[in-house]
Image: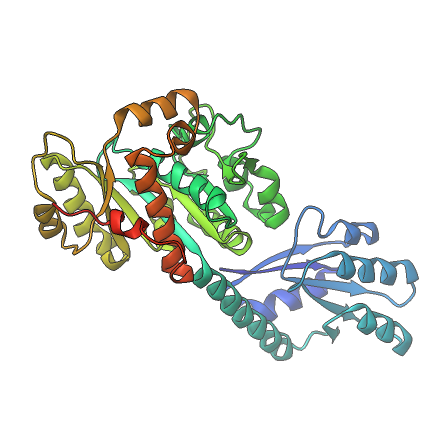
Amino acid sequence: MNLKVIAELMNEEASEQLKAAISHIKGISLTVRLPRIEADITRIGKSEIPDVLIIEITDDSPDDIDNIVKVIKDNPDHMSVYIVYRECSSETMRRLVKGGVKEFLPLPLQAQELALSLLELVSDKRVRVQAHKDSGGVTAFINAKGGGGSTLLATNTAVMLASEYKVSTALIDFDIQFGTAAIYLDLNPRSNVMDALVDIDRIDPVFIQALMTKHKSGLDVLASPSDIEPINGLITVEGVNRLLDVVTDIYDFVILDIPRLFTPWTIAALKHADPIMLVTHHDLTTIRDARLIMDSLPKMEIPTSKVEIINNRAMTKVEETSIDSLKETLHKTQIHRVRNDYKTAIHAEENGMPVSDISSRSDLTKDIKALALYLVEKHHGKQEEKGFLDSLFGKK
């Protein structure tokens, strides 16, 4: 989580003073624009929404002051505006204070004063973001072995959260080269997740919501590209972190479909998630891979306490291990169960429909609904509706 600061300045001197004042402060993303063009101020908020806007003014441009007041009025809460000036009349200050300016900074800049003010804003944003995450949060789905069904579960759980439990939900398909979340929902996105990750300076709520594709359930989907794209060097940890910081600030719940790939940027995405849903089956090779992942996560600074196990395609006629063996091997006392229903699952995939639209009474639909309810209750407390959790944790 970074405090996004945009500075519209008129000269290099002010720029250097600003950079020196905040260079030692962690958690600030600074963009300086030189020289500032008066008309550019009104653009702020249409293509970007910073946490802090620092503007250098002169006292001989009334239109400039009007534009600043308009920007403050047009932008959402939590954007603080600082005015940098060499000369500023009391009348101009009164107009700007009335318009919502937070602070005035005379030149040359006083580094300590500015640093303390920005540190306070960094702290405030951390509190807001954490409070928001506590009320909902990020859930990642990842296969223990290829073809495990994590995309089907991630997609349909997200749909269920949006449609059944009426919480604002976003689904992000991080399987950059082979993602199928949009196909599962019969969507034709005009934008995709790479549009954000290759242009991270544009990442803000307005830009991200413009990239989303709306599903009829109310779910917003940030799809993967439709073509196979080379990704070496294009996706960065900073980009993933900035994207997820913004998305979690917009939505109550964020569902991530993570490829079975451990790179710095996928690890960064997993660090945002709690819980991480590791999708397994009852066969020995899948359980072996699940154990390998569980053993490796602490080395990536991801605690295994955040990992929960989904036994997908459960209760098939042929199972190589029991649920108790699965619990013992993976050191988990509870296992989420999603029962096997191949007919409903394949019909949903082939028609680009949620499983609930194929059969609202199928065991697969019931278990996905229970999974969604579990996430709601994990973050929002117990719901009035009863009965679903009883079927969520299966026993054999």
